[in-house]
Length: 105
Image (cartoon, rainbow, N blue to C red; front, side, top):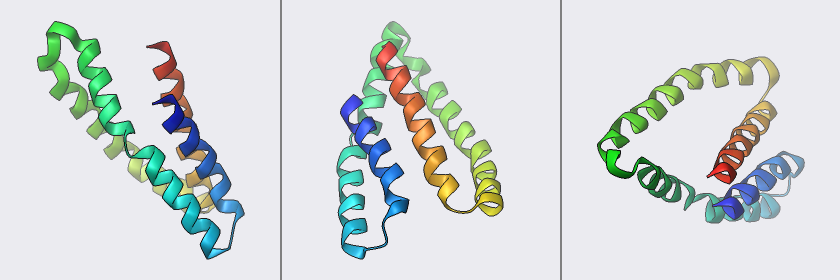
């Protein structure tokens, strides 16, 4: 999971620097290869941490959904005000926080 998060952060930070279609295509392919298992690994870690309280998993997923719903308009406002590049930086920052939380596990 750490490798996937780290690679995703690096690729997302590099992506705005390139204009060549071939380079962007390769970076997007790499990004998808490394980010794909993150959701499943996160779910597995969450269920493991819940232990006997696995029934609480739905509440945790609901919290994530609500967080996404609250943050989406904020992200849109940031993109409108600062341009598309801010989305890459914010994504990298959030993934870095995920990496830090994962390291605490």
